[in-house]
Amino acid sequence: MIQKENSYGTFDQEINTFFKDAHHFACLINTCLYQGQEIVKPENLMLVDPKIQAYTRDVLMLWNERYGSYYLGIENQLIENYPMPYRILQYDCLVYKDQMDVLEKEHRKKKDLRSSEEFLSGIKASDRLIPCITIVIYYGTRPWQTNFSMKDMFDVKDVEHLNEYKMNLIEVHSDTHRYKDKELDLVFSMTRDILNANFNTIRNKYKQGIPKQVALVIASMAKDEELYQQIKEEEKEVIVMCESLDRMREEARAEGKILGKTEGREDGILMILKNLLRKGISDSYILEITGVSSELLMKAKQTLN
Image (cartoon, rainbow, N blue to C red; front, side):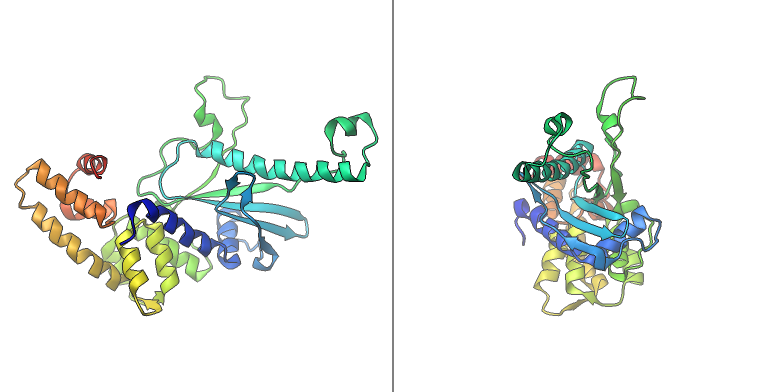
């Protein structure tokens, strides 16, 4: 069993590795930003160091195409992060600051700044920066509820003249895109069904085997520790996900039946809910098999050691 405090870090690593594949990355960008047109070619993408100063992006690619170059970033969010528009603005600004620092250093080395405007600016009027576009992928079970842009973070009436800095957000639980890359489409569609507790759909729709590494990405996106560990321990390199889900949930269903015999005693119910949470069972499935309220499940989380 993965330790709770380390699980999200492990999930992040699995997801990031998946999107470092140029085909997966290009398909995501083309589908979400260019309405499925094949604008970004995998061969024109180059993985770059995601660490900029003290911050590390999840995935950062340099896209070189005939009209210019772009930095394209992905930030994965397993839970909602309230200041996310600010974080994205900060990350993108650091990409620009890093480029500015390089330009200024080059000009100091060459000593080619001549006019007072150039000395003041530290760069030439002809210098250009590479733009940065970031996509946030959210894997929560509930809709993103708070801030979608910097405007949402201000408590003022006049927002007309404020720069919006709206973030590009994909919510996997409600994402309806169809992706041409088969692995990406499978990962998003199955994760969506797990997040929405559509287990009958999974049993009927996903009977074919899938690569073990892809299955680990799905379990990571669903934040399902026990499913992740079961797949990790499989010796086979091809996983039938409906079978893995069924095996994993047999024990959870048994605990759910025990819960039905607690005759409404809240302390007993909370104990069973905490057992299910410790096993890494997703919130949506716990609610499905137990019938408890989301408020009671939240209480169990708050008292979980």
